[in-house]
Length: 146
Image (cartoon, rainbow, N blue to C red):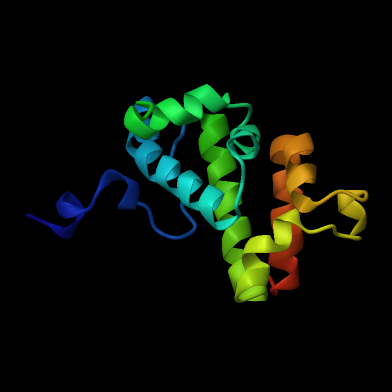
């Protein structure tokens, strides 16, 4: 058996590769890890069920609670994209602000013009994927594009 055969479906990609999310089998393979990551982000960022649901594209609170005992078989492209962006934001924050600030940054008022007086969290909830891309780009730029 080769290393490729042993690796999980979600671990088959190299850094910089993007899986074909139009393929339902890829989405099914990535969904458990994406849900686990979303749960951990919600805990680390101290998000309410409504906030994490909104970040995931309007997942109702009741659905989020059901997913604890019965995970969805497959996230859509939209949800997988959102989780990916949120993980990139999380990673950049850990590099830029080690410690408590990394986890509280998204809920703190921010004077950067892209937030228009809102917290980064509210900006991402209001603006969806385009706002998440903007926040990720801002943070990646601040850390030197690493």
